[in-house]
Length: 106
Image (cartoon, rainbow, N blue to C red; front, side, top):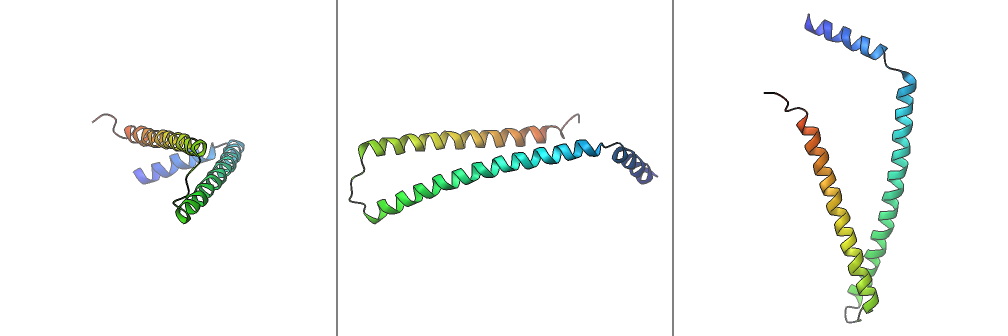
């Protein structure tokens, strides 16, 4: 009996969904995805550039690094580290928030 009621309620809810609103959500998700893909592509380019630098340093370790370049690299490392920490905190915050809704009243 409960299964039939659940199915009926689900059918009513589905019937009330506005198809236009669903299409809007899909379009928004795709736009967000395109932006995300652009960010990923930019990050991949940066990583590849750093990999090439590391290879060149490994190929010739005795070659001294330009002090200006060394300081610039140090700043980039700090910036990337901070960004990574922010992402970790954001992920942790999202996972904490999503988990707290199910705990409710005991």
